[in-house]
Length: 459
Ligand code: UD1
Ligand code: CA
Image (cartoon, rainbow, N blue to C red):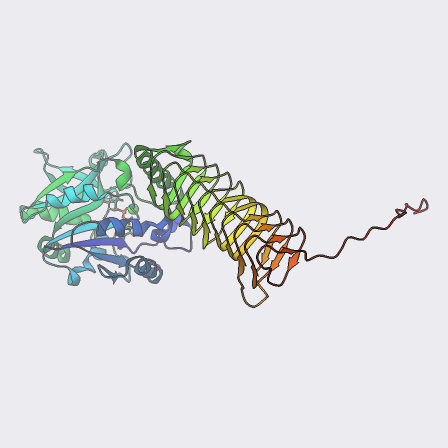
């Protein structure tokens, strides 16, 4: 048993008005065509053939990066002579079982719908996905005989007035045996209103061959909606996000407003999580039980442990936040940041490649880069690790229970021992040993009887 899935992705997508090929425009952070490829690969034993044309190299690159390439091959359609001509490009590479045709710009099709189609295919039957639309303008119409058997698809441009009244439309998605397809495709002609080889003409050939066309419908019309312009892309994005928000709420996540939540990737969730409005999750995110996320936060590729709190307007990427730690409002935690349990990072703090052990506090206006900070240490407001000398990055090592006074500069590489105290306003350039007090600033000078200058009345 094997399955060949053909994904048509050669068209230009003129109505997007973009230099990017249409199928590479992102939906929930992933190119349209990758949604389709991922769904295709979720079918058992699927080999996926992507028909590329306009922007073919970039489509190939975008998909090759995503896959590892094993179950994916590409066929180039040099000239776009129609959907039938596009599928014909894959004929040499098909196996001898079933073939499913999908579209690179119809991203929300579901595995279950496709499985239903495939289950209907055998030597005597092919399967077609149809949808009934209020306004069928532009779509191929499903023609049935008086016994309701499907006998043909007529494209809008080729349809007569009576056919144009039909509201059951072709979604373009169909499945048949490889033997049937191999028999029918070479017989297509381009004698029609658009002078194209229509894939849809195989339906009449099936009927003529005594192969019954079994039509079924998707569980929701949004599954078969295509993207032709940016308005449709935005509408599908909202539909997709709505679906994801509903899944999360069913799993026990509280969303302040499901219409103001975006997931661009995958999230693993525990229970009793609360997410305020305008939160964006990207890449691979894990949220354990009782995590609270305030409004306007962006969280990418991060693990947030049980009970951690991310306050409003924080931006996290490549972060691990320990249990019951908290950050923000307005925290910027960059890749390689690890906060221990109950660590606290307050407003306008930036961290990068920094490990803050359990209970470390960095409450305000600080940059901690390439740093290791031991448990219980307090980092005062305005502390900066000077980690870059203009050429290389250096590490700052701070022990446990250190007190770093406000507005200190720690010039790396530098080490501060356990229990040490750094006086406020210090510039630390040399090692400070355990329990020492380091003061790295000029002494205060006081001038008595000092007269402030006064304004010259003539100027
Ligand atoms: C097609 C169907 C129509 C159906 C509609 C659903 C045909 C002849 N018509 O019409 O019955 O109702 O889809 O949206 O199949 N493509 C290629 N190479 C080509 C031509 C097209 O790769 O030579 C790709 C396009 O990039 C696109 C898809 O095939 O992703 C559909 O092509 P399009 O021209 O949009 O077909 P429609 O006219 O919409
Ligand atoms: Ca179309």
